[in-house]
Structure formats: structure tokens, C-alpha cells
Length: 268
Length: 203
Figure: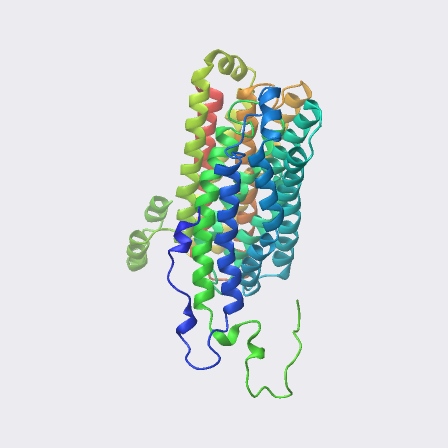
């Protein structure tokens, strides 16, 4: 999924000689954790559990039971349980950039809260639903069916939180006068959040193009999302690389002769 | 849009400026990126619609007959007229006739506001009569696509509002912003024409 990100050139670690080498090391660690996180996600969802592409909402009961109690789903849920903590790190790289923009902090906070609630509904809920089916044997088929519906609807139909999150991100890019990220990326983000809205009909349709495995709600949205995700990381990479060291939020840490010694951070 | 500007702004003393207008793309390039991409995305949705329509033409035709064609046609005229006033307003702003531009953009804005109002007159009787996105695939497409377009109209009205404000505040209009807004509004208009043809008229 994030191949192009991996092929991007090396970080600017060797640019400054001497002891204080790379003042962006923290950001680069956060940044490179993101492709790792998404690759784990990709492996878990696609070839390991075949949770994605989504199974049909109208699957017959035996197919649902077999999927919910499969071994691979259990392994997938175990990996997710151990790695979902990387999600906040992936959002940190956006928030650092949005803080540099000449926009109201409302955008940053909206994005932060949207990302948190989005991760709870879109990632933790499905993980619990599929995990319950995989780890706890003995549930009735009808209960497994409910967990199956719950898991998929939470995963694909959890539009509101992500929608607000990306809306805040997109608008911040468009309104920003510091040109931290390119304007067209802001517009691209607008499509991305609108495609999240298009997922609303998954609650109504059980088959056809608007079901959770449908052309309109899943496939079009996926094409937009995956390409957007790769492009946004390339842009974030360039934004981190191009930021002058003295404008870093933690630049005061590195000032050798800072008058009055180290000073506390002004804001969160 | 550019054409209108070229025709109405034919003061001989202004030839240098007009030549400049001819050579550049109106508005900001990033807005053109958005417009072209948005049209491509809607194009993909339209292809999806036509494909699923082909799977069950009878259902789509019968459902289509239940739409309110009159309001659809009125809304088409409203948006087209609004677009015309945006073009005239842009042309006036280019010729530094700020007061006239404010008036023309005001008319365009008022017509734009009439669109969602008419849409409400269309949606509410449909929903109260039990026609919802859950009724069948045609109505799902109808509500999703017109709803998506309505989001675009709402955003366009916000942008037009900012244009009017910017024209009021400064004596010298920020042409790139006015043109960017006009480009967006024309796209909203174009999308509606396509939607109207596909959802209301296609037989």
C-alpha cells in the first residue's frame, strides 16, 4: 500500500555534521512508523484474514460462522491488538504539520478529536467484534451474525468522525498562508472526506453498489483513499524535510546558550 | 466566462490587460485541479449509475416517472441564470466596476439560495410519501447524487458569500479569488445539468 513512501529518499540525517545531528529524529521515527503500521494493517486485513475486500453483507449463516471462528482471523485480531497503538503515532505527523499552518487551532483540535473517535469506532469496535468471534467459541450463529454486521458497519460506516477529521485537515491546507502543504492536496482531501460520506448508505443497502462491499461505497472510496494516503505521506515527507531546524517546535531544546536555561513548552 | 470578459471588456485603452486575461487560466490552478478531478469522480459515479440502470431498466424508468420534473427543470433554469450572473459579475469586477459586480454577485447568490429551497420542496413530499433511499436502487442513486450535489451548492454559496465580502471590503477586487469562485460555481452548474439529464430525463 505504501510502497512509494518507502522508496522516497533518505532523511536529512547526514545534512548537519557534528554532534547535534538530526533535530527531526523524533518526527522521522513517527513518520517511518506509519508505513510499517499500514503494511501490518494491509497484511492483516487482506491476505491473512480476507476481511478485506469486505465479505458480502448477505453471506449465508455457515459462511459467517466459518469466517468468524477461523484461525486466521484469530491471528489477525491478535496482531491488531498488539499494533493498534501505532495509529496515534500516525496521526501525530499530521498534527505537527497542521500546527505550523496559519489557521485557527480549532482545526488542529477538531482533527485530533476526530482521529481519536474515528480510531475507536473504525478500528477498535471491529477489532472487538471480530476478536470476540475468533477468541471465544460457543456463540450462537445469530450472535456471530450480529458481531459480523457490527464489525463491518463500524469499519466501513464509521463516517462521521473521519469525515470531520479530514474536513479539518483539508480546510486547514486550503486556508493556510504558510504553504506548509500544497493547496491541491487540500482539495484532494475534500474528495477523500466526501467519499467517506458516500459510505452512509451501507446502513441501508444489503446488496448492490451501495452495500458495504459495493462499487460506490467501497471500491470507488478505496481507490480514492489509497492513492490519497500515499500522496499525503509523500507531501508530509517533503514538509518535514523542508522545515528549517530553527522553526521546530522543540528547537529551544537544542539551543546551546539559551538565556535562562531550558524553558518549558508554551502549549501542547 | 473568459468569453464574456473578452466581449464586454473591449475598451481599447485596456488591450494590454485583455491580452493578459486571454493568456492565463482564470482563477487559481489548484481550483482547476479540483474541478477536473471532481468531474472525473462524478464521471465514475455516472458510469456506475448507467451500468446499474442497464441491469434493471424497467425499475429505473418506473421510479424516474415518480420524480418531480417541474421542480427539476425550474432548478436547472435557476442554476443556469445564477451562473450567468456570476459570469457578468466577474466581467464587471475585471473592469473595476465593483458596485455593479457586488450587485450581480448578489443576484447570483440569491438564485443560488433558491436552489436548496426548491430542493426542499422536492425532497419533503417525496420522503413523506415514503420514497426514501431505501425504496430501491434508483432512489438510492437519486438521493445520494443530488445530496452530494447539494453539498457542492452549499459550499458554493459560502464561497460566493466570501466573494461579495471581499468585493465590499477592498476597492480593488482580488481577481484570482473572484475567478476561482466563478470557476467553482460553473462546475456546480455543469454537474447539475448532467445530473438532471441522467436522473430526470434519460429514457
